[in-house]
Amino acid sequence: MARRYERTPVSQTETETELSEQTHWMIAVRDNRDRNAFAALFDHFAPRLKGFIIRSGASAHQAEEIVQDVMLTIWRKAAMFDPHRAQVSAWIYQIARNRQIDIARKENRPMPEELKEEPGMEPDASQILAIEQEAGQLKQALATLKPEQREIVEKAYLGELTHQEISAQTGLPLGTIKSRIRLGLERLRHELKDLKQ
Image (cartoon, rainbow, N blue to C red; front, top):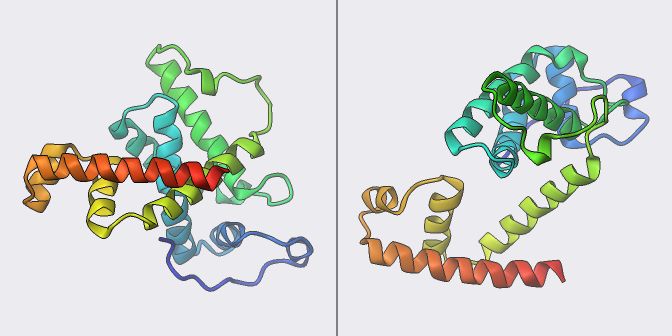
């Protein structure tokens, strides 16, 4: 959950168009090196970036490292952000994509299909929007689960823990964990199907 953050004033040209909350955070980082705004950006984008990177073939551990690197790049290169050229989400996802391409080249690995794109192409805003919408729908669906089911499903899929690790953390038997995950996923599938109709 993003931390509460008070907006700082932005220049006249930047207030002419309605800017997203994330863009206000980015402008505060760019113009004032605002650490609270950066923390809010991190809270908002880090989990989304991790999911995006894992979906394009990286391991959970590698995704964590890439996210850390991307967020550090955002802090260092904040001066390059221009809200008139790209939305902050498009700018951040492009940095993440470029980092993944660098790693794939460095390790001489085949390039995942999702990363193959003509050089110089702008990030696909519709793809980013779809990811944001999916994340919102998943959050809505998770909220409908019983608290004990939601906790286990989140640990398994968002926290990337094994059943054994969840058992050690919660003290619950493996059978209970597997059962809660199965029931929780069935409920999630049902809820997500309803949300997409």
